Length: 419
Image (cartoon, rainbow, N blue to C red; front, top):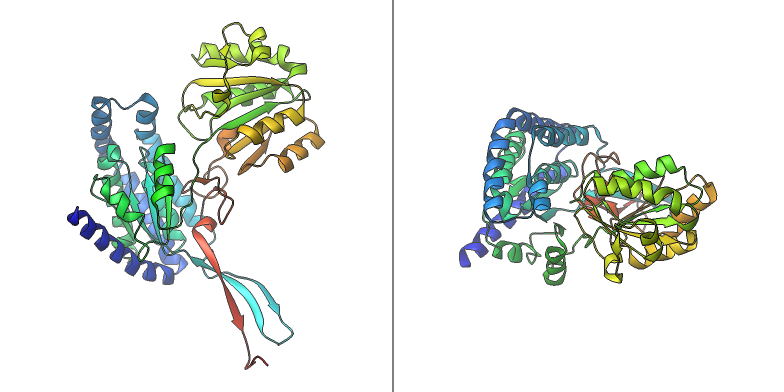
């Protein structure tokens, strides 16, 4: 345990020192590093996939569930996606040092705000090795240093990606310690990371509910978090049903083990008989288990009875709960009661209803006529995301560059004194 404490203290000290260099790095240098990391990832595609194969083999031996193995897996496509995310981050405006809201005060001073890095960001995540590249890129562009602690199941993948990150940082003349991937799989390292107030400014956990709940309870460092992705699609009685079926199919079946997948489908009673049989046939053909209320079950015989727990469950699996609602008010009430405030969508051609849904649904992302699967930093044009926050303070929704920065007040004077 003492070795872990010393190791993490060393990591923290190096990150703090690197954060001061990163805060001063100009845009061209940061972009050069991002592009160099992207090139290293593309050039190392075969090596990354080979390292990932070791993790997948171990995961299957250890009985990791299918959804977790899916999140763990790297392919040529996902490797390209990591590189593209870094390249896109390089094209984004550099927020650091930007001055806004400058105003003269009666005293003659000017008061405004300047965008600044947070400092050192600790990121704790499970399964997804692509987070290593995404997090490194976003922290780098936003002028922060990063301490990344991936899941033990992805240790080979994460270390291989870390080598690419260090190659890119070195090529740009930036300290390799600006991005450190924790090398130990000992869980004690997490306990140290989330309590190192002198070295770490914010923690971002990405993973299962139990991980995030534990970190939120034990951390002595501020946490940007979300606990669940209980996402809804509501099909209104004034929806284009062709659109509705495509959206509801995609929102659930595009990928099951992701936080922006739909977990509950709400359908207006006036169109339920038209849309549910056709839509549920698609689900059943894809082996999606259906759980519904009484009204939905009358229309689809293969549907089992839903319980109140189903409305509160993030399945991350081919399971879907279905409810027939009387109107928009009932749909919004259901969402605000059971939603995890992640992402919710309405399908309707009625502008007024769409605007009501946008205003009244209290979630980080609220959509009209679009799949919940778009709730993603890359799809939002953020380049990549460090996570999706369902908090309401500081950052909400996909956390990209702006969410990894803060602001400080700046004052410009010409000799004024306060009297």
